[in-house]
Length: 176
View 1 (spheres, rainbow, N blue to C red):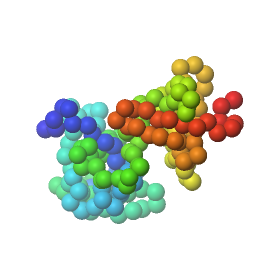
View 2 (spheres, rainbow, N blue to C red):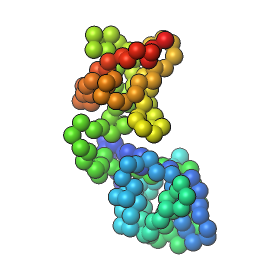
View 3 (cartoon, rainbow, N blue to C red):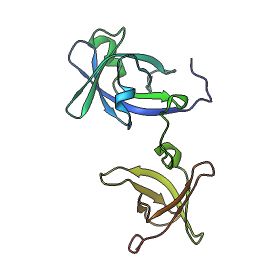
View 4 (tube, rainbow, N blue to C red):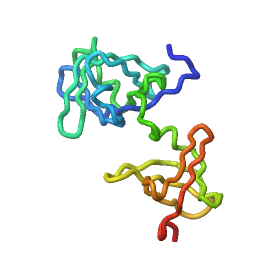
């Protein structure tokens, strides 16, 4: 059983089964799939049909198209894993990989207040998009439409996750 106060971090979504030998298709939500989805990794499945997370141990893993195909120890057939479809694969916060200086996990950024260099309140950081070249912070102001801020040094000036605050420089054209 998992301690109630321990935060779980999503690393994948279990979207379907693959074949009849107990493999599942997983969409990765981690920057470290080579650490999370290897033989012996312990993952927690959180599913609306189960009152408690289910601990699973990866028996094998391979990449197929845009999915990771995982097989779990003790789950030799499709009948053993079909009930897991729609679940989220999680890890304990204490199992996170250390990040380089100046980097943050997305879950640490979401919920931060976003202010300008002049102290003007812009809103709350509600999502981080990852379209390609750089991340984009989605800031929801108290009124009006969301503000999209590129996560580049010219725009994001200071991030303080302990105090849930992001200080930004508004580049020309970012706000209508």
